[in-house]
Length: 160
Image (cartoon, rainbow, N blue to C red; front, side, top):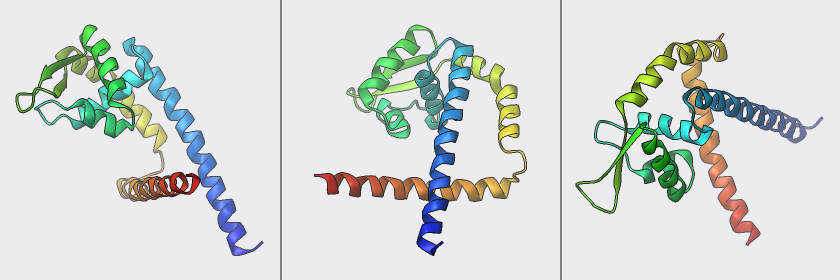
């Protein structure tokens, strides 16, 4: 087998592994969401808001960017999460066109209840990895994600 064919095989294997991981992560996120009585996209929004909020709230645009979804979808879903008491949405004091979204104490309490289970799950998923290995893997995946976005843009331009 030639080197190019070997690389194509290795890249193909990697792509299928990523497809498998995506599927497994979707199932895991769905399970966490069900424990809170929300949908999987709402769960991801809670996670994104919790990660992005540095004490001043986070904009819906920032959440949309992190999750690579439309801001209007974030707006609709965060309205629902606000109704069930997991979020507060307040107009930004800097610019009235923007909302500042924060997790409520109820949401934080629910997430704390799940914390030990999440840590156990992470330990299972990353069994056999040390911190340095996970850091290295994350750096490589970040590079693949960046390069994938560039490849997607090239494909889109080429199709037009």
